[in-house]
Amino acid sequence: MILPIVTRPNPILTNPTRPVTPAELATDKIKKLIVDMTETMYAADGVGIAANQVNVGMAITVISKKFAGTTKDLVLVNPVWKKNTRKQTYDIEGCLSVPGVTGEVKRYTEITVNALTAAGKPIAFIAYDYLARIVQHETDHLNGMLFVDKARKVNNIEL
Image (tube, rainbow, N blue to C red; front, side, top):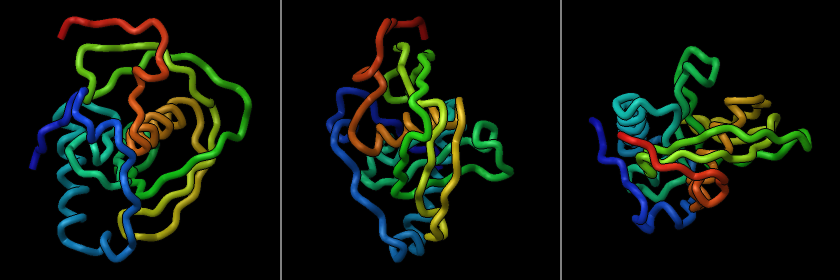
């Protein structure tokens, strides 16, 4: 089911989400949420989506398999990352929750990601370049931060 996407200035977007337990991940409710988030992301032509973008204050994000370099969409629960390099680059970002706005955001080019999978299993991997950018963007969402809080050269675009 495609869910409504919450947009700025809804306060759920600026409040940190809460961690999800492995027991919660085993529930039909959370399994359905992940499926619905994935459908919503694709319907909105997104590359990733965080649970608070669909009005759920839990630390879950989905990243499109096209950008994750995997055969399945990448579900990250309670994700945290650390930089592996000091190298950062600027690139233009947009957001489903801030429609019609883009801006240049500086992000690390290589990070190590630790999270749980949708099945509640620990996962760790190194993300580079665009995938690293997506993970940082989605993790920012889960921590209550929007890309416009970090962006320079913010522009309104025609929708």
